[in-house]
Image 1 (cartoon, rainbow, N blue to C red):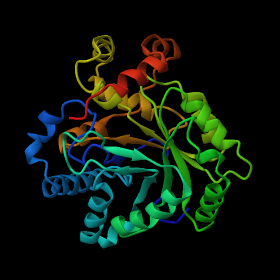
Image 2 (cartoon, rainbow, N blue to C red):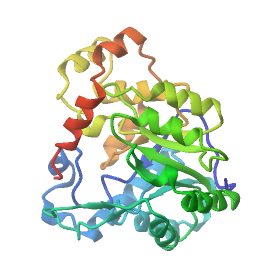
Image 3 (spheres, rainbow, N blue to C red):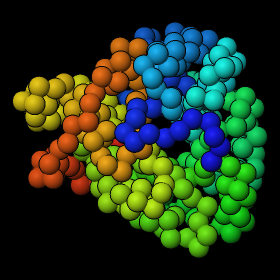
Length: 315
């Protein structure tokens, strides 16, 4: 890995999945971002810059983007151009393997297109560098699932090994009910190029935790995404968990972020905030251990969790 920044356990990072494009699957976007016709590239760039400014002031030093997050990489790159002296204190992660095809439309029939082939990697790597105006420290295959060809493509794996030899930490992000299987498969590859993973973990979907602990112990960087379950753990959608949080003296979003920060294998926990107040609330969260019995009582079957997530509307 390059020597930009350093990883410290259980630190908060800022993810730009929800701010780099006008539509996404997180709850409450109309409340947080206003009417769809106000979500211009200019407006979201300004908002992203404001959020990164706030993140910087809060001590957040990890930024996360992807080729498919609309203009997220460009938003980071244009912020860096305003603050060139800050790059060395940041760790920047991005992802390839999906392309944004929504055309900046709320009503696009398809927002992202998946391609985990070698040609996609070779196309998107220079695009990422151009948009960020710097080389990312982490570069992940985006949303690897068991049906992805990425982990069996010898030519692609060789290309990823060469990238790792150049000092970039190569990894993968995961999604779906079999995240743990994918993580273990990637770790067990002969001469695996992977040493980082970004995985959904939250109070409703903690099933990948054992696999994450295994790769953390093997020296991987582990990034937690969707700790608030795309907004389900940020409002009143989960009354039982809201009551649990209140009994412990917390708001639900504080409890959810705190539970992720408390995981001993978590290197970075991403905030998906789209407002400065949300980011500050996330940054105020402190590690909050949840005992195994309580965690099991609130976890959903992974198949059900992911089926519900897939049905969420882009708003």
